[in-house]
Image 1 (cartoon, rainbow, N blue to C red):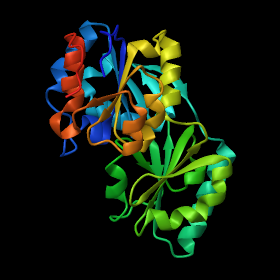
Image 2: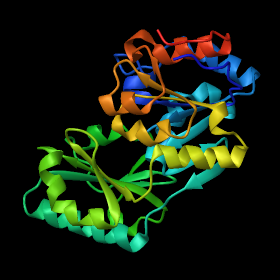
Image 3: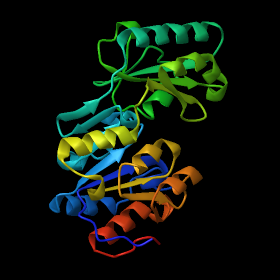
Length: 276
């Protein structure tokens, strides 16, 4: 599908299955491209379910000209400036932690991560669970009591050593007021209703005066769907979920072929149709 050469001001990119290669790494070719984007005044925004600190660690050499859409859109930060956030009610968080403790007492093998703005928090820190939490949370603090945490909570993540899909029905009633998302074989995320990457991207656009026509997005999975609606240049990766492919306007090569990088380069070089 052809499109006019864009006045590109913002690029939002999912991480897993989109930017990251088959080994879960950022391709080396991205680093000089980020310098080029910065020189051209184009913001680059990783958009992920990951913690802000985890994203900042991954892009440590480029923090001064990056925007981060973290926690699936619950927290958006540019430099030292918060663009938007969507914290959960403290009483709800406390009731959820208490409920999860009860499920664990009944025999479910669970680990709980309370994800705040300043850090993520766990009270279970044994050799089985701690490494699982450390995979995703660069800033992680073990505390004696999650109910005593003093932070604004963006998400509660639950790790089920058996099967997250088997535990999710025990939280089904929460869907009336919150999102309950099975985000992996072992993980469940609980967040406020309305939190998604698309809402976060629109808030970022409003804060920076950037339009959807000046925005490109790249994604591959269902938590990228709303982001596709916030940009005129919406790209589904070749490896994308069918619903994402149907929602996006354009295609990019797969993450294994570094499709984000090659497509951005073609956009910057004025190639009229970057779709491989």
